[in-house]
Length: 193
Image (cartoon, rainbow, N blue to C red; front, side):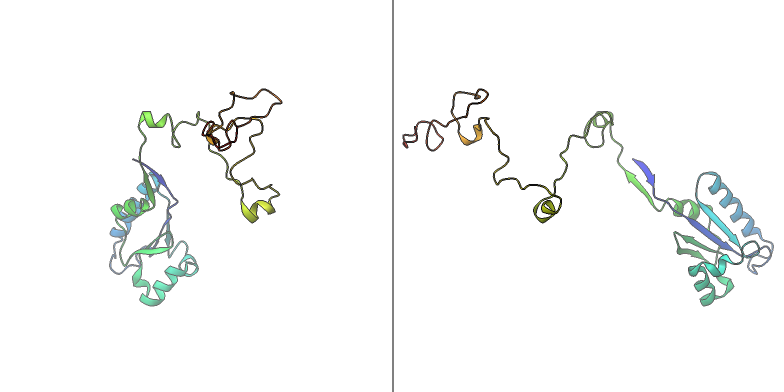
C-alpha cells in the first residue's frame, strides 16, 4: 500500500525557558525541542510557539486562548493537530508527533504490474475512452442541446440488425433498407412482404 498525505499541521504551544514549574530545569522542554527538530527534518510540518518568542500566538489562536482561559497557563504545553487540541498539560512525545503527523495519511492499494498497464489506475499511455456525460432534461434545454429521440439516435441508411432486419446486407450509398416481413421476422406470413 502506498500512502498519500493530506496536509496535517502540528502546532505546539510551550512555555518559555524556566516558566514551567513542573520542569524547572527545562529537561522535558529540551527533549521535546529535539524531537520536534527531528520531525521537522524528516518532513513533518510542525510549528512550535513559545511564550517568550511569540506571545501573541497564545491569544490569537482561539483553541489555545480558550484552554488557557479554562485551565490557566498550566495547560501548557499544548499540541493542536489541524486546529484541534490533542495533547495538553504535557510535552508531546516523539511517538505522538509521528503518529499525529500521519493521522491524515490515506492508504491506497498498490497496483501490481499487470494491473498498472490497464484500467482506470493504469498507465497514462492508455487514453481515457469513457464517454462524456451529456446534460439531459431541462439542463440539456439550458445548454442548447437538442433532445435525442426515444429509442436511440437516428441511424440513417444503416441496417438495424437488432430490429430483425433481414434485408440484403448493408445498403449501398443512397439506398434505404427495407424489411422483408411486416413484423420484422421475415417470413412469418403476417402479410408484410
